[in-house]
Length: 129
Image 1 (cartoon, rainbow, N blue to C red):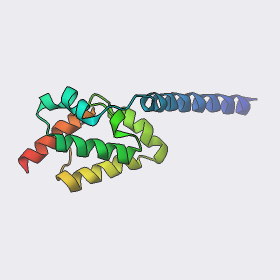
Image 2: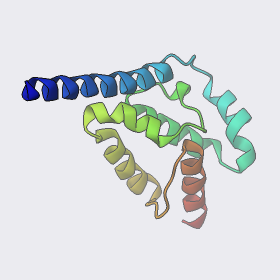
Image 3: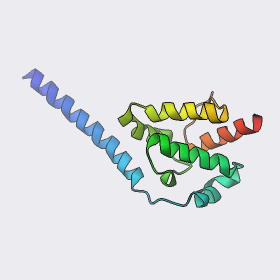
Image 4: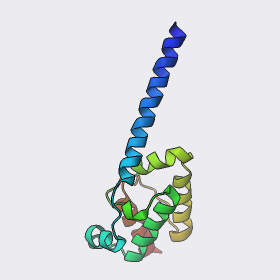
């Protein structure tokens, strides 16, 4: 009886966590795609980030996390991206970090929480290089 109860509780918890992760994943995918120039002009340009840096980072995020870069927003949290990536054993995160190091000679020493923070850090690395 105790084993049955344990298995039932464990199964229920697993289903609840899976539902939560899938709900976050689906809600992001339901966003309407926006023109990347428009996202840049509205949300990024004023922060001193060059369009080329913005475009390359957004396209890489889309490629490595398997999502349309036009649904990414600068205020998106990397916790949300980890929801996508957890289904692929964090392959996207590793590939993104490798691409950043190879493309921009960038390795973050600080914790980056949002896409905009990543853009700012990459832009700063470009200025220093």
